[in-house]
Length: 581
Image 1 (cartoon, helix red, strand yellow):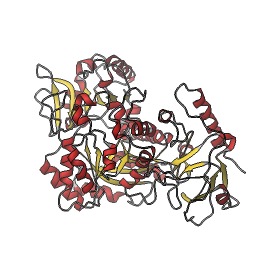
Image 2 (cartoon, helix red, strand yellow):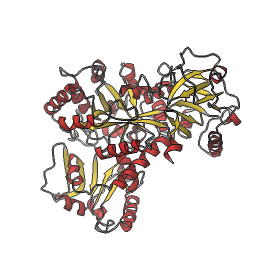
Image 3 (cartoon, helix red, strand yellow):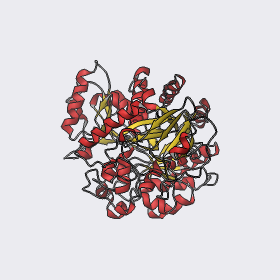
Image 4 (cartoon, one colour):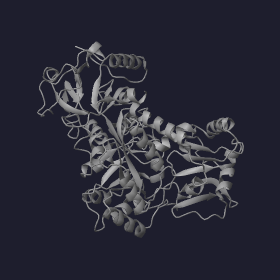
């Protein structure tokens, strides 16, 4: 038998790392239970390029029913799964050039699962944050300002400081920063930094001046400019008002954009993500396209287009690239109904419990939304609406209810964080997919009840309520709003507890392990019309899979958070190894 040395070495290293952690880790028996008989699947003709054997391979079959199928061996060829079954059956298929990989070599406790399909990412934004001022996880205003000051000291004169990902709800005082705060540390550099949700941002005085924003500036529809007691801007701009600043910020150079996109893609692959459904700039799509031409794109990307763009532009961008390209293509249209709970800009039917009089910022009137939705649906586009508040979801459903919008179009609601219980049956009736990010709960549970009140909170992040009603779920992360690792999301979905295990949030809406894995793989594939070739490891499906150091189906939920991805394969190729070349 031949083994794959890099696989064994990586697995051994990860095993040593896990044993050294103080955090909960699973024990792995030296000999694992193997499936006793071959599944009833028809192999695909062809000599395998590689065979994995003597392992525990989760095919994805049975996830939805919580009866997962496992097999001992899998044959890969031409980027597809050719056959699955027992070690004896599959190794017989080997040809003279077939590579044989023993998954039980040296008792390295390696498990294979279908690759994760992140149904909601922003790769371009993630990459640019990594290259600029990254404020992810800062615990106080003073820590935030110290990082900004360091960036300003290193920047050339006149250079804009951008990036962000700050979250004031993590701070003791929980007060929003002001332009005066930034002015103290930015040294005259125009500065514009997004909050972690991307729905509000803080600008310093130089940035406001460059954008021509004063106390008398009228914000665009769906936006707001916060003013202080004297009627002057505080520096906080909300939703569509951010565009006033964005339009004066110099774009990144082609080299900067490429480097940022490469970093974001690498981050996804390192965490076991083999496909993403992404909303980045058109210039980022052109970078992905160039990477594909060079043979350097190793992540499957379905790129969304902006719902607000003109029909002519949308049609031109759709026609620009082969829609049947399995690695890269354009997908649905992404529209914004509202903002976020953290920024109190999500559109609510009743005021926020902790901000009476504020019901958020809808981005469209119902009439505008209805007209645009019908036009774009008639042109053959799948629609997906960002809707976090219950009013935003109702507006989206009213648009989807119109004659001419098909219930088989697999239109989507992105986030669906707060829903009116009466709207859940409507979502089912209209064939709408709930595209949700369970990791948001890990952040939001600290203040969601204060924002919503207990009655509305009971129908927030309501994953099980959707499934019980027959609504399809697709899971993702909203990267970089949250880290792209799917294992935080799995933990949140099956426990509805924080990472420390000390706080729970309406546990009646937690999912089973199989339901969560299904939503992150086959559910996401269904949301992009790819369920017939992606999300399972069965003959004829894409050979997109991951090797991890623990059994994601059986380990204790806390141990999910410490999962180590050993290798990530896309179309049967080691995506991490090829992306590093």
